Image (cartoon, rainbow, N blue to C red; front, side, top):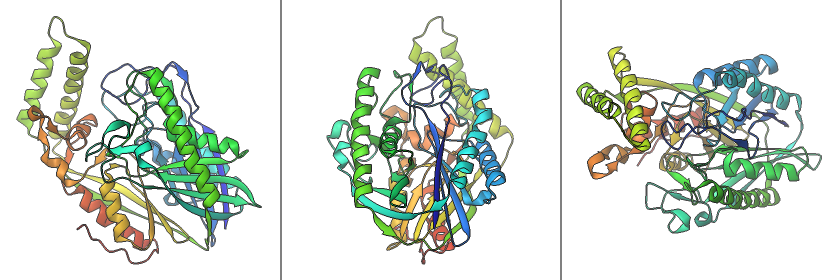
Length: 450
């Protein structure tokens, strides 16, 4: 087999709005703590080639991802279907998806982004050399890293909750006994910082990856985000001074996980690779038009007050634009459904399945159970961004008055100006990804959501 790595700098100019942590914050960056990169890994075996590009970004629209994949294909000759463009989901980078109120996109930055992503893929392709792949599963001291924010977990390591990832996977690539690149796979929201932080960086997973890459000369270290929809780091939402200190703590810990993985990795045989994609239509729920109109009227009343505090203004402004967007969509009378791409890449006997969601961890675990004893790595934020894919129980939480309300199920669709998904989305995705695992030549994945 051959492997090649490369990265391009995709750091935005200081002054762009950062994406995440609240509505209409005007959170403009005031400095670069750590550059952002598009990091590419090319692998060739059996006459076929795949490329995975991991970007230090919150996500990518389908338009940008498609353009990057198409241009990368033009440059390399690798089919676009064999190129995955995914994101780490840092909340300390620019707005690169179609969110309402979570950061104003910089159009000049977005115009250049597909080309920079494609260049990373091209350089990795050019850097292909004979290589050996090794893999390690590293036990993670979970209480020192993350917790399940929806199911029993608490910050600061008090309680981890379940489910979550108890192992990080490290993929090591060496040529002539020299490390040329690595990738790691784990599930955790990169949200150590908060609405009070203004520095650009890839959060602790990006910082840690860069630390280990620099320790190994010109190596490149990708981070592949798993199913982090309900998983937070133990440190989050603190003022900037505290957040940056916590960023270094977690980056130091994750860097040690990567070093351990490089040390313990065992060679795997890669005689062939494969790719397969499918487009899946997901059902959505039509909203109540009268309820939306009431919400819109209420938001307008708030905004017409003679005086109101900043938080009240931010929330009402979001309600104004989000409900208007959903009402506009409703007026088009399109079917309540969405079609998304699922992509499978096989490297030897390992499957990487990309999807465009912030997936709850239990859904990923269902896919992992379905393909046992095979190995599958469910990669989020791939080739598009379509919001959260929560578990079915989240759709029972729809009462704001009782504080029993699912942000993932009900708020995030509004942030995208879209409808909520049918509660069965997790089951549908798990079944489709299990079947896709088989299609790419990896055993007999059997759908089993029980």
